[in-house]
Amino acid sequence: MMLIRRNGAQPAWPRRDSPRPESFWASYSDLMAGLLMVFALTTVITLLDIGKRLIEPTHAVKEWEKVVEEICHDPDLARLENVRIDCNSGALIISDENLRFGFSTTELGEEAEGVLREAVPKYMSIIYKYPKFLDRVEVIEISGHTDREDASGANPYYSRERAGQVLAFLMKEPSMKPYEGLLKEKAITAGYSDTKCPAECLEGKCDAARRVEICIRLNDREVLREFLNILRQIIGDV
Image 1 (spheres, rainbow, N blue to C red):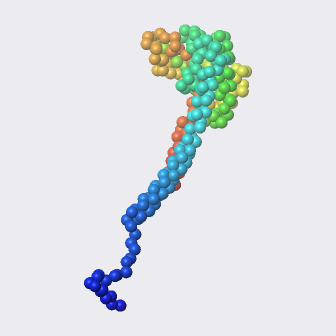
Image 2 (cartoon, rainbow, N blue to C red):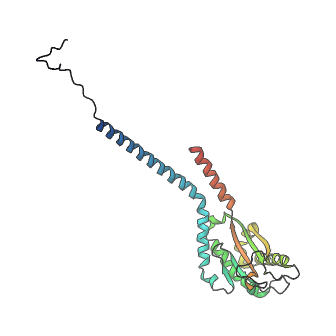
């Protein structure tokens, strides 16, 4: 069809509507904002799931913290003289002033047996309140320690033998009968001589260094193994 000019005017071509740039960019920005929100939510959910899975192996450690907290604030243990709790490790520490090993001897006297009879069953009874935690126990270490005074070089022997005397007494003590199975399965003895002297022991002779400690140790390898298994699963899921 031919268009005829009238009075020299330009031909009236049909007009075609085109999208305005403002509308296009507004729609695009809304789309991107929505996608970013979905991505953020997905990331948060994923991280929460990963965090939850990684926290699971730490339950045993948290339960041990509860055990240590209860042991540290137990009034019966607190009233015992020269018996204290290391509130970091949960170790029961009995000083030589209570054990009273004679000079160059490894035999327990009646006073020492009385202290062990009073302190150790109470210590074990608190731990036994957490049966699930007991499955995580790797060893119950009974260790002997000396100060640096050692003219004859016999301190390693004495520290080891004194720890052994404590375990032997606990194994035959009637008040320890409820815990006999755990001791048979988990208890070990060690003699550290003066290798773990307290920081305040600067001289050769030091009362605080001469002690026997009973310490519960967790199976750290099992906790680490659980972490590694979860990490492998997460990497496999990604």
